[in-house]
Image (cartoon, rainbow, N blue to C red; front, side, top):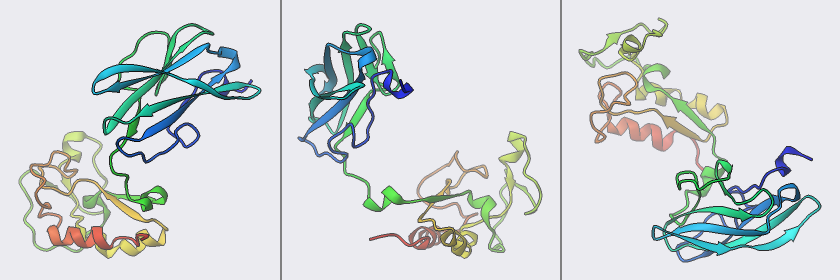
Length: 238
């Protein structure tokens, strides 16, 4: 028997959830696949409605040579609804959540989830992103920006230090104008989006320790240059 048929299984795909973009107030069907090798006599779906646990009995939807598909209905009373399955029979009582099967009660952190929040733009489903670390991607030639006290100016072709305290202070001079000048390279790769690491003012080259999120780090350019990169980087489907 194939490995995938040896344990109960559920995931967020269309095979296991009736709709991937539910709205608040909808009732969503969820399916649990239970192999005959570890059969269940009863199945419930455990949800947290308004923070309180609730159990809803599942019914047998269909059976195949190797497995039984159980179906349960979940009413979305909250924008985010956690759920997991409780099985009885076979190897005994056990919960099934996002990390697998557990023969004990488990916390909610790894429950499956249904979200009634607004769905992302449809073009994201087939999008491919190119990640850019602005300081290390391309330099526009400089604009006379002063080097901050924390930085260690580094020549473009000099290797980055493997030592953390030094590496995070090395400043190569890449900027947003350099990114914009090389957008043809990104589009020629057939990519449809950019993912830029932080661009905000910070005492490091990686900028994950940003001081503010209100504007772009002047070492990289200005807010207008950021808009130019992000709005015109790649063609976006309608």
